[in-house]
Image (cartoon, rainbow, N blue to C red; front, side, top):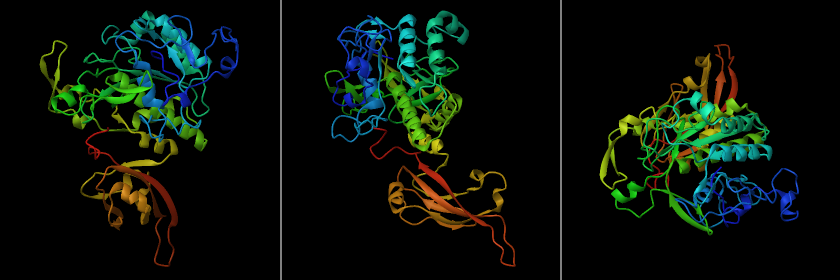
Length: 445
């Protein structure tokens, strides 16, 4: 739900949704009788015509840039890698371009309502919505329901529609807004939709992001002033993605944070399909919003930014604490939670004693750890140089690098006795996640 996506961009073309009836049909005719002629990769709902690349306005590349974060092909030796981009061989996410902006027009509730219904009726499972109304212009769910009733009805229609076998309904994911205001913009703020805030590459809240009531989860959105104030390459602290003309460029905003969450959601649904797992819409939303790392620890101190008038200002980061959502999204945790494996955070850089008891459920005192299995590859991934040891029914290890790994732990369930009885041997998988430091290149870039 955005400006037009460049459907033939070299890094996106393989992952565009294609309406084969229209692709193989006659130009100017509604070959599949869905009410829209020549809607091969989507439709322009602003002008009621075929997709139209914008050339004017503040951000004509916006839709293509957002799409790249979700769907740019991986490992093709060019450009960027989308979160759910796959290899380009029909194994990635499919992007349907529902154009609700063209040049300086569009973006109203009536236009978006038509586009959202179209998405639901033509098979979309997630609506990626990097748009919204200014924070504070709508201040309650009741006001939104009455003031933008057509749009809300369309989103609710989308959520109620099952287009993916892994989840009972659609997911609506919105940008929280860039107003530097303590409330999310609508529609994202509505209780049934996901609102995404933006963080910088140093994990602090981005200077422009909305926060507070209505905000649900954080993701990388970029922060231009990180580059400027630290005198590093222009744009390098923003988000790099696809832009029109088959090119690449940097942008920032909750618009850039939103597709990180949408892409991870798509990855999670794909994995659920692979495993044959199913979730209700509420269950999957809950899984998504709880597969996070702590952002509140970075909501302290101050940072600087430039105001619209060009003057340097100081931002108190403590105001964002508990306002950025549940935490910042972690794709690996999403996949492990889909798989049903408990994720355990491990600190980086010091020896750590892991007590498994809180992760083993009721009666866990009768579970004795006997062995731990971790591959050489995963040890290297986490920077573990010596095999983890078991002492006093706890695991002692040291991770020196941020990373993730699945480990298998062998336990004896139930107590033995002096006559030679032993507990039942069982094996349980856990995911070790080392995240609480900056990655080796200085951030999420």
